[in-house]
Length: 319
View (cartoon, rainbow, N blue to C red):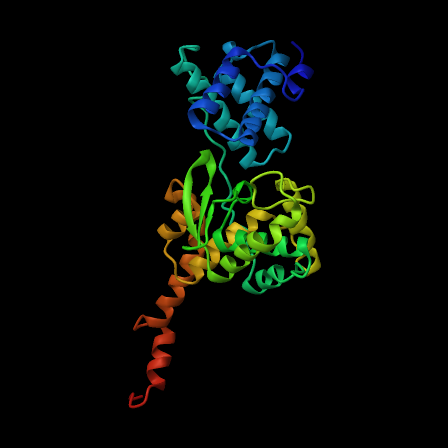
């Protein structure tokens, strides 16, 4: 088998890889996009092994090391390397457990170090300008305003927004039912202005799209909006309000978490609202909490400069 065969999208994979992807589909319920990413990572290894005259069954730690060295030579980012290695580790661990292999060739490989990157988020002024950009006097503008408001009000992933259906919003309680990764359900409260916008959209605007599905947000044909469509809308609105740096639907999610922490929310609450399975996924936002704690410490600790200055200004305080 030559390399080109492995590089072709949806090309047949060896039985071991097929069984692994089937396992991910059945046991973990991964999305089609995530499965496609796993398939791409495995296909890249297969193409490399093919060039060495090897197969998955004959792959060794040395072969994997050469593969990762090859990827580094192509200037692949550390995050991409880590993702590919995670995919391969899962594949080989599954193969050993299923008794398709005797040993795991990935067991001795170290993960590449990832740089500490803070999530991109918008200031409150930028977010206010972005939310106000769609024209609510038009049908599409009103729809877009509601979508942007929900992304920010509930910290939704783009797939969660496009997946919202009739019945996922309870107007009596103001609660959104959201299905996140692996179809995990969570309930997210939204503030009153977002509730009002969504209720008005559902009651008076959505029908004008002549729906052919149960999705809440529709395109001109009455079908559910795609992730790509929403991404393009956000990019256009951001350019119109003068936001020059690149932002995406996920920027709204980062901004949601950041502004909650700036306002005093604790990390555990933010974890639940975001739908993170583990707290370490939420700890990327601790730079916000750290800054707030430092300000509180500076303001209230008896030995701090700020506290001493305040004390001097109090009536009756001796100098």
